[in-house]
Length: 459
Image (cartoon, rainbow, N blue to C red; front, side, top):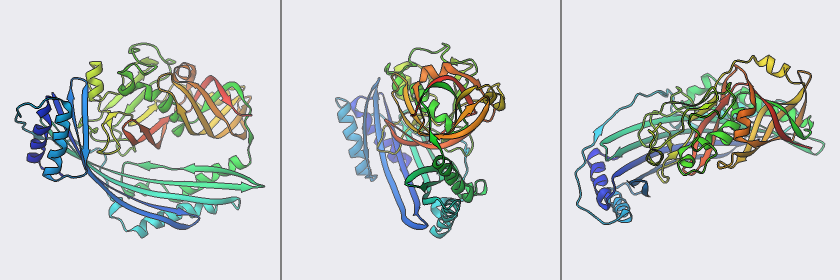
């Protein structure tokens, strides 16, 4: 990484354009992955990302530049370009950095990048083989085992100089079930902010079987009927709807410029009183957790919505300046090539007052969404459209036949008000979230919830 003395020199140089604050973000990340298709290794990758991003502030004006040349001259050249873009050069000032260490909430035991490829391939092979053997109708299986060793350095003109290291592991298996010319897919992709000791907690065989189980359910399912109906959404990845339709609307990136449906609503009732939603980057070993954010601010547990009342936004440094509110440890970026923006970490709807069995029993007719798929959302309006990866019709309080091809259509503000039952089996699932600062790992989650009325797309 970059020495404290060199970081001081670079920051002073970047301040020369009249900035009132400058940060330096350094990164060394090693990614490795093994991919397998139909029992054969398809690809093995091992790459190293190394570079520095420099950002200068003057009020709410920012200038950013990055470089992969981390030599002294390369860093000073990058800093001079930032200073020149900011404004007229001025006399340089001295900066004294003081090193800070923050608690490590996710120590890893077995670093994925240090383990022989054969050991990692055997883990992946076990998952893919279990998926293939699940049923004779499983026609294709693909899988990936990925490990990340991510080290950052943050230094700024407030005197901060700190480093952090984060290890992540994830296995993903996709299965295709085929019969009579019909193909249906299933997916399972758990991960965690830990090393290969992750597989002491999660069985690769179970990962593969779950992907194929879901594919087989969809293969035997009829098309979902369309219409407005009551919908129950299961825990874990069901939380992707809140993440997309509501979570992005609570990030300062959109709130601070008025491009969010939630702008100006602090203290207002925006959801059913049973809804409490949290973004918590401090959960030990969680996929989206980090010790510090990518601006060097310690992460924290941010209660976004409490009993239906909007309590907080997720705020980075620029958002803090624009909104006059404190930073919440929510600044994240894919790599040194991106400016950090406010992003989610582990975002979920908390457990509620209702028993899970009562939620299903309360439904005379509706849709039970056991697994959610991907979708799209407009943060300004909150309008969303999400596919249902695995769904079932509910009749007279009982889960009945499986259906496929369902989608949920609505707006974030509408669904928050229409969540009228919240269960008690909170669970989280893993994904990658894309936004202005690139793709970052995030957890989504919730218990089983009931939405009293929502548009279901189908046939």
